[in-house]
Image (cartoon, rainbow, N blue to C red; front, side):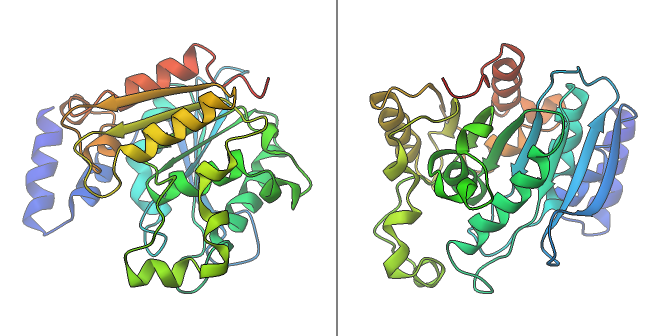
Amino acid sequence: MRRIASLFVALFATGCSPVTILNSVSGSDMVREQRDLSYGPLERHAYDLYEPANAGADAPLILFVHGGSWMEGSKDIYRFLGTALGDAGYPVAVVNYRLSPGTVFPGFVEDAALAADHFLKGDRPVVLMGHSAGAHIAALLAYDPRYMQAVGRSNCDFAGFVGISGPYDFLPLTQETHRVTFPEATRDDSQPINFAQGPKPPSLLLHGLADTTVHAEDTELMSAALRAAGNPVEERLYEGVGHIDIISAMSRYGYLRRGAPTFTDITTWLDEGGASGCK
């Protein structure tokens, strides 16, 4: 802990961001890290892979999709998450995808489907996970079967889906940048809540009740729609937890995990077989 505190002081002195600081102390001797691997032909078709030395033979690979309002963000931010889940015995792939306005909906979801196809060729089950806009993208892979059909697969090829602070029902659009990202003709298809019917992989949906970026009502409505359709879903709502608190609590370090039970709830759900595939 003294070493970590010293590193924090040094990095703050150089003007580093909190994410840079967090990632700088997030390495693990038990997790092999590989960066800038490719799942497709474009520059943003890249991922970082975190492989634990102690992964069980049946441990699923977690395909994590980053957030950033569909316009920003990077796999590079999430070393803290990859190493933490790796320490828990779960391989993790953190993927990039094309961003708006360079592409618009559904381009970034199609990128994620391409990445999913890449990992489904492996020998492990795949669990989708995402935060914020990444949860939206991953939810569409899990719930709208057309994306995986386009790459010759099924949404039921996934063992499960973990959505963290996801926007699942966000029409009408109020920001001009989002109106560009989601052309009017595609907007109904952009809402995961419209695809609750039919078989879906089990879902674990988490949200902070103090989130002012994506309101917890999105998770409540998505959970209710899945439940009404007979699909397995578990919901966790956290008092006093905001949009960033919930994801920074995925760190390996206890002083950040105290902010929300995100890590414990996710790993418990995985450990207990919550990601059991479509029924």
